Image (cartoon, rainbow, N blue to C red; front, side, top):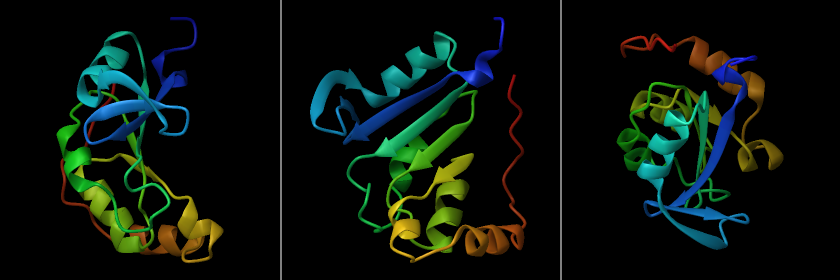
Length: 131
């Protein structure tokens, strides 16, 4: 309560609807959706969701995973982003923000390129309002 919920981000590593730890090596036994809901109910102000199955592959985001998450806090999605279209797809699927790793490390994208292209797009989704 002193700093507000926005300072608490919960990082969740997910594969096929289940949560993992230790860079995706150790199963927790928790269902991804259930753990996200619990984290939000405990005061998380943001969810950082990584698709283990897509992480580092540059094969595109896990759109079904993103679409399955409905929470009243910002959702930052990571995993599989390699093109501006991938970034757009993730945002249109419901992510509020994206994390890009491999595509930047291997010079497939630049931050400026993504920023320039996304700024050209007028999103048709309803605006989200967070408490």
